[in-house]
Image 1 (cartoon, rainbow, N blue to C red):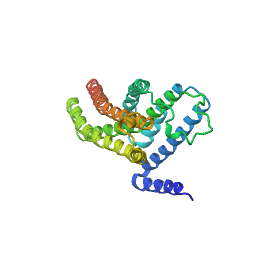
Image 2: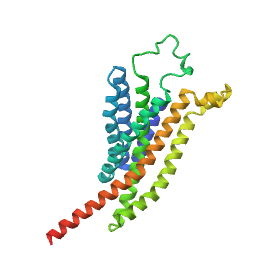
Image 3: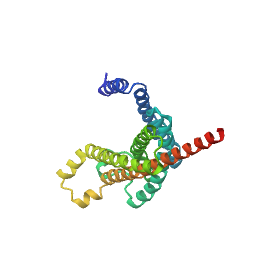
Image 4: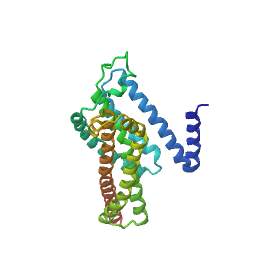
Length: 261
């Protein structure tokens, strides 16, 4: 048994013990998302249109992440709508930034690894970079959307008569905590995965200018910025959509009750 297999089994056991049915569904969500990423890579390598594949797999991945990882349908539905809308907005922003950055493709660090191999496989490196950036932001956006929707729904359940303005205010307070933890998670994840590369830059005496113009660093830094922007957009949008949806539901219920009387 390999180390990876053992860790997967331990993860499945712990998620089952801690989360019960939801934990099992979340575990299968991770497995399905991994398979979806492999499928995307295979389809791109076969020459299918990258932009169309990205548009198809964005909702598929969000459905897998949110609906399989959440036990409450109302939370999942609101989270999906807000996360999907934020992903579309962020995708447009990513397209513009990737065009201006011109950081797609392989850096000089990959030269020795690719000696003897063609670096022109007939695929669009800029579109691949856009797809990677979009998929990298999905997890952070979906996590923020679920956290906001779950918190606001619990407030609404415990205080059914809360006004839309008060619910939005509560969403702002919850959003401050969500933003803080999400940003730290994204930043520390980037520094943890890039620590060896930072050490390499330091040992090879890279200047600040060389680091800031290095493709690997620029791509990772851009992905972090996209994720942070996506989370920032998700917080107010989730609060607005859930508070508006709850107010409309209460108004509709009140009209039905009045007609019945």
